Length: 126
Image 1 (cartoon, rainbow, N blue to C red):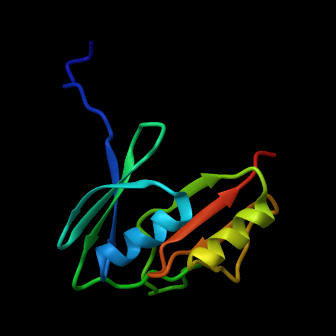
Image 2: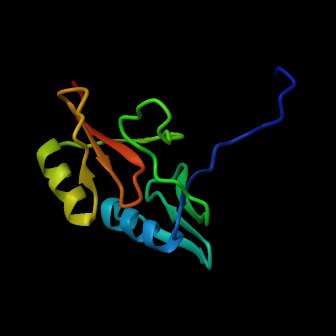
């Protein structure tokens, strides 16, 4: 033991102008269940356990730019989502409300943007 208290990552939180709308997108995308819904906060639970996704309404939300240029609002983080069929996963993401980013840095990865601009990567193992 190194003296640190026990800690466990239980969730990832994405800001949004409307938590319920963004949670609805990720529900359509991932199929995860809503485990908690309040006025400005929604949690989705991962079906196999592990960290879930939460969404909070942020009235001063600024949409990130991908890829960012000098002075652009930058993404604070992004999600990596492994898929078994990249073209089918991209089509599903677009049907759920995502857009395919113009810039694609790798052949086995597709960068998509959720409805409020958060980038997320769909990828297949090399």
